[in-house]
Image (cartoon, rainbow, N blue to C red; front, side):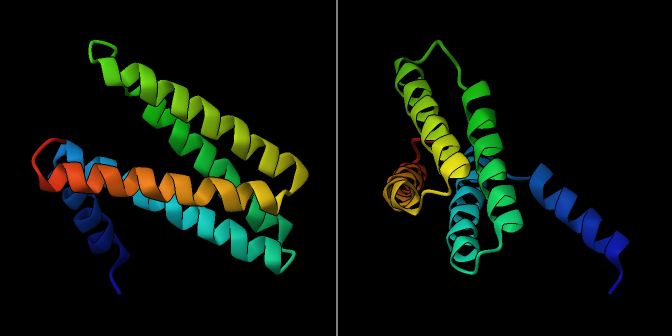
Length: 123
């Protein structure tokens, strides 16, 4: 497979996405990495586990950095992102599957909320 052509296609695809589509892409990646972390901890693959949780934290930090403070919901989202970042840091440090099991459905629900908002034209 021509990797150069694939990279161009991927870059063009991302560049033509709407803000809502990009937001959903980030949330999908976040949920995917949380699932990967769950599987990795089950297999005792701690390197993959830590890399997956680290990427989740980076995504949350990016989402937080891109909030527009002129909108009231941005303050609430900032608090949510801080909470999730804190919890995932606890997951990473303690390899705590209980906290991971609590955080993942909440982030999945948040993703689903944004997906529904985008379908209604709100994102």
